Amino acid sequence: MGLGEKMNPLIIIPARLSASRLPQKPLALIGDKPLVLHVLERGLEANIGRVIVACDDEKIASIVKDAGGEVCLTDPSLPSGSDRVYAAATIIDSDENYDVIINLQGDMPFIDPQVIKYSFEPLQNQNVDIATLAVKLNNDERKNSPSIAKIAMVEGKNPNIQQALYFSRSVIPHGAMTHYHHIGLYSYRRQALKKFVHHPPSPLELAEKLEQLRALEAGLRIDVRIVDAVPFEVNTPEDLEESQKLVKTFRNSWKDKTLA
Image (cartoon, rainbow, N blue to C red; front, side):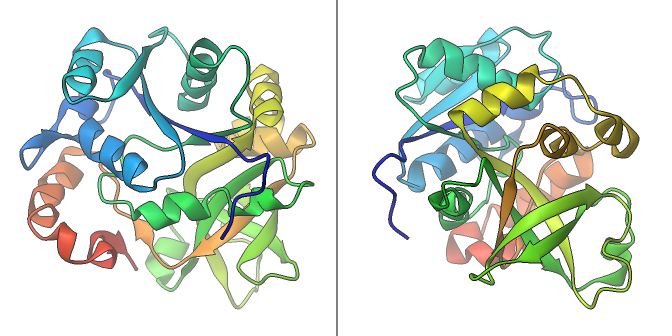
């Protein structure tokens, strides 16, 4: 995939100290380094542009700076990771030199850097406002889990890139042969991110508890790049324990650190 001439991406990793399910999550050690530094390394390995950690606490900022990374301190009271990403982009790049902002979630220590590249591939189409990722669901238990967002999409000329029509915690489309698991990694055109964070929470967003529905209700187009596997995420103490096993061998294979 080649970048379009005007695509100048900035990767921002939101990192919040007071995560409810795993307090001080960005500082949690996986192997010999904190989670936030693993994610920072994956962003840098994607080799597509500048990488910033947008955090809410000096403890995170200090660790990132000591490791040679770039950091932006943001208001701890910001309501979401998207708001933190937008705030950091506004501070770091007030002249808006970067026209694509990639929200790289701070809980994916083993994400394949190639997948980060895939995350903004749909933006090659100038009609697309936001790009994200999905994986084909092959497991009935996960398909029926309300903790996993599913996507109803329409296929275009490229079977690996589809347009999102709706996101739901229910199994959609009903009766379909194939269902897709949404991965919450987003690439925004700069103005789309601005419109998204300034738009009030929408009725569908509040009903499903999925903020991407706000974008659709605001008239923004979301296209989805289909990838092979769901990156492992650290959200709970159990996930953190599992990550200690995975980190010992993760350099051998990116796909070993994913969910089928």
